[in-house]
Image 1 (spheres, one colour):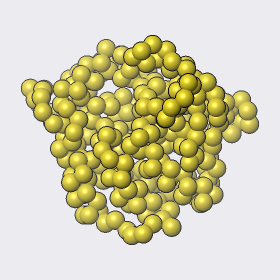
Image 2 (image 1 turned 120 degrees about the vertical axis):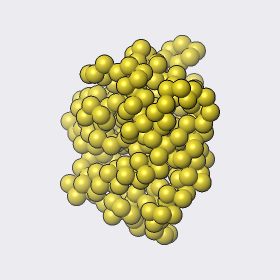
Image 3 (image 1 turned 90 degrees about the horizontal axis):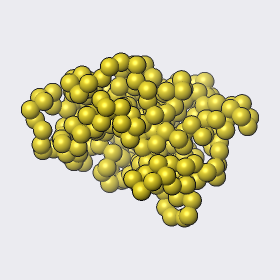
Image 4 (image 1 turned 180 degrees about the vertical axis):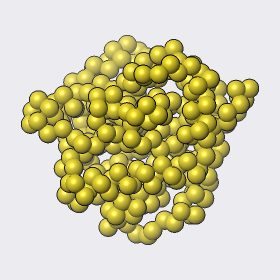
Length: 269
């Protein structure tokens, strides 16, 4: 890594890049996700089967506490907010878990449903973890996964780019955005079946983090203010660390976060 990012500089970057502070996620979209989760809409639960009874009011309270959104139910339109101090605290916990993985030389699986935004973040982690002696797993490579979409069930193939699991449409094309837990389920099933080596840590977002946590695998990763499932999973002990940040900004805006995490995890080159 070329330079160390200080806490103060990172906090300023989070706000300036709208990774935290006032973010681009519309408040109405976040509230719609909370209502969907309360109704157990699988597009919003991300593979999590929550133990508690989470209504929209309870979800709003949780998201205000863990993410920093406005707790006011009357605030229904406008930009959403993420508390940058919540993001910084979670990034430190995220880095600490990576540090323990390196200490134990633990096998790790990384995957993203946000390949166009977050792939570089995960690929940098994968390279650093591998260089430090952690096996970076790539089970079920090329496996067909039928994923429900707004256009019906569509066949995809599970692939790995730079050690990071992504989905690609079976008929061709670039990596696909997905909320589905099916890719991580396929990867974990293949890992258990083919060589018996399961990851001791999954690093990912959307269905990767919730799907792994639901199956009892330690999981860490980022989540936006309209991803209540990840924060519910953390509150219920199925996800170890949920990092609140906007997941739709330019991919290069995540580079300072990558540098900070690698330095905190003692993985900086």
